[in-house]
Amino acid sequence: MPGPHTGGVQETVPSAHASAVSGRSVTGRVVAVHGRHYLVDAEGALVDCVTRGKKGGVACNDRVEIRATGPSAGVIERILPRDNLLWRSDGQRSKLLAANVDRVVVVTAAVPTPRAELLNRCLVAAEAASIDALILLNKVELPETAAYLTRLRAYADLGYPLVCLSARQDIKPLLPWLTGRTSVLVGASGVGKSTLVNALVPQAGAATAEISSALDTGRHTTTHTRLYPLSGGGTIIDSPGMQEFGLRHLTLDELRAVFPEFRRLAGQCRFHDCRHLNEPDCAVLAAVQSGRIMAERWRVYRDLVRENAQARY
Ligand SMILES: Nc1nc2c(ncn2[C@@H]2O[C@H](COP(=O)(O)OP(=O)(O)OP(=O)(O)O)[C@@H](O)[C@H]2O)c(=O)[nH]1
Ligand SMILES: [Mg+2]
Ligand SMILES: [Zn+2]
Image (cartoon, rainbow, N blue to C red; front, side, top):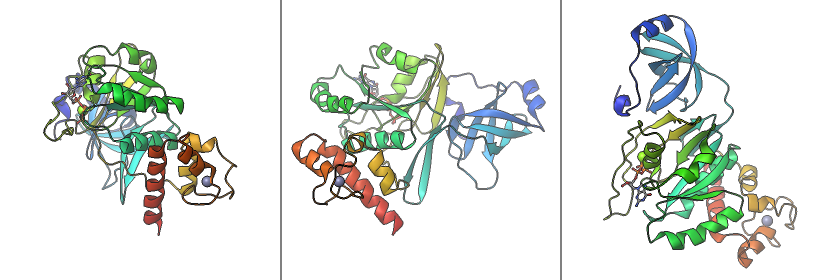
């Protein structure tokens, strides 16, 4: 199995324990996902699992039933019912980010140059999965932060908590949001997700990397999703930075519902089935025009509706 043992968290499988697991089904929790390999914590033993046949569909933090096939190897037989699932779908492919989470922490920073598109798609995915979202502005000590913060304040007005900090200096402002809960960090490559994890969990040893300043893009340092227990209670999940965030699985009805500022105007458009795209007397479009709804948010909505229509017809 390629590279699951890169983190500094203790991963040795006590063989006596593993053989006790052998042959019977036990339940466990998926603590890391490496392509089609899943590291499962089952009764304290870490077991390298695969799924039967070509079946994928397992997410980090899934509760699973496994059967051991060797001293530290096993097969996932069943995924236990999920509370929720954060996932993306680009065309035919779907990518499961994490299951059974309490909060999506959308990490952003003024450097590399942020894309409103990605931030909003993360928020939409969280809303669609009925998971609370928080926006974390990292790297606040950078001079570029001030202008970006002004833009982000509008998101706080939508109801998304906004936490500002520097992972290199002090992560305390984030702690009250994480303690006792399961949170997943998502966002573009290079915003500092793994740096946050290392500050929160000193023994994590998650790889981080300098941003390529020539390209002003992150470098996709983290290649797999992995969870870490927090010393104060709770769990944090690190995920690979993303460039695209497809949401083809959302229907028009769902898309209209996952924008809280649209919901507030429900019933105020001339047509009860208004798509808020180009209809006359549309309350949403009027609010975009007057600046009460952020145009960058509406544009993301429009693009999602278009992609969704292409996926369906
Ligand atoms: N100036 C500054 N740089 C930071 C801060 N936090 C992280 N960085 C730097 O940002 C770069 C990228 O950090 P990573 O933690 O690897 O970013 P990531 O989001 O995990 O990236 P991927 O794994 O590719 O998704 C590294 O050089 C970090 O040292 C911060 O608060 N301030
Ligand atoms: Mg990373
Ligand atoms: Zn409308």
